[in-house]
Length: 116
Image 1 (cartoon, rainbow, N blue to C red):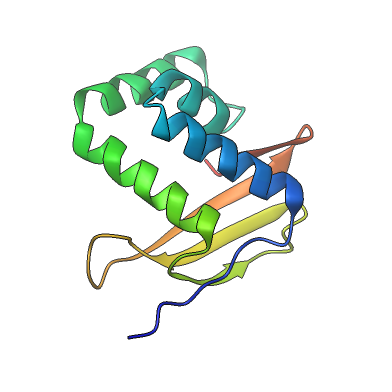
Image 2: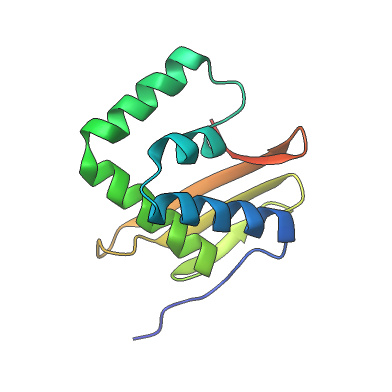
């Protein structure tokens, strides 16, 4: 059984992923969400997403596992985009068999954020 490995070639994106992993490891949902969500989200949308993560531990655990997997490159089949302005990680979910996932990031205002 071979697990594909592929990490980003962009140091700033890797730094962002590592920061998100650290927030997740500390169970700091507020800091995680504020560093993760698209910059064009309203405060209300941000609060709604944060409330959802606080009330649904399964979603929070899955999100942490997914970000950790792409930060480590574990299960990442490919990274689409130029990794300068856009990057979409295509990967196998870390705990769900036969569950292909993708998470996209955009570089906006000198910061990497999840795609909306």
